[in-house]
Structures are given as C-alpha cells and as structure tokens.
Image 1: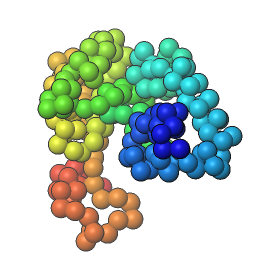
Image 2: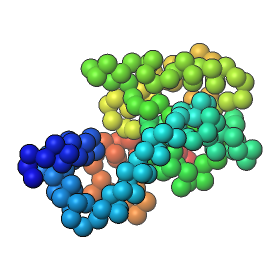
Image 3: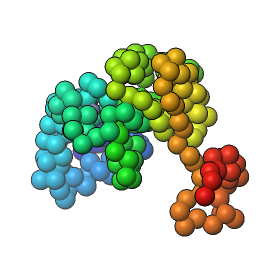
Length: 197
Ligand code: ZN
C-alpha cells in the first residue's frame, strides 16, 4: 500500500489542513478508507461546493456566497457603526454580543516581516467605505497581539483623516474571572480601559 500513488496523493492533500502533519494525514486517510468512505465522499463534495461557491463580500470582505453578504444587505443593521476585525470568525464571535453595526474584515493583520502590508488588508476598500458618508464611528477590534495593536494604530490614523470617531474595544478581565489568575498585561489593559460606573 505504501507505494500507492493515489494513497500518497490523498495523504499529501490532507496535509493542507492546519495542524495536520504527515502522521496525522496518514491516520486520517486510513481511517476514511477503512471506516468512513461515505463520510469522506460527503467531505469531498462539501469541500468542492464550498471552494466553488464561497467568495468574499464586496463590501466587508467576509466570506459570502453572494456579492454582498447577509449582514451588509440587512436593513436592520446600524450603518453608522463599523467594526474592524482581523478574520471572519471574529465576526461570528462579535455577533454573539448585542452589537448591531456592520463590519470590515481585514483577512489578516499588518505583518511587514511576512510581507503583509496595507494593500493585502483591503485598506483602499475601507477608505471608500469611510468616504461613503454612512459610517460615523469605527470600532477597532483587532487582536491584542503586537501586530494586532500595530494594525489598530495604523487604521486609527486613516480613520482620523476622514474626521470620524475611532474607538478601540476594551480588553480586560473575563466575566467570572478571578484577578489572581489573569495575566499582568490583561490587567494593565483593563485598568487603562476603565470607565465610570
Ligand atoms: Zn458584507
């Protein structure tokens, strides 16, 4: 079996998934061949369908099957608020809150060492949105990593040139969290972001 080209191709293809090395890919391939050929066929079909049909929203850049995504085309959203996030899963996370504005998805963050500059983040598209007249406040919800903070700072400068309000989400102690288990940089952020109660 080891010299089967088809099997080798399958193992190599499985390695495109994050966190899957050669050993894991082999284990998955054998599992599917031995125990779940039907599941594997459905997976192959779902992958092809998704790759063929899911693109990016022309307005906010999140994943979408239509030119303009469901959120951007909804009449129920507050168009004066624009929340900037790094990746599509961040949108789903914030949708769990009571935020009802719109989004802009960078699909990454500034990372000069990896060659990711402003162009790769669609900032020209963001500028068009800001110039469109609907947005009044931009909420920067990039991650609190060094690169995420640098990205937030870079975008805040752009937003200011449009004369719009720009805010950064507060990062702090998780609900139900106990201070003694929270790391010092989180506590520093929480204190810096304190507000009147
Ligand atoms: Zn959209």
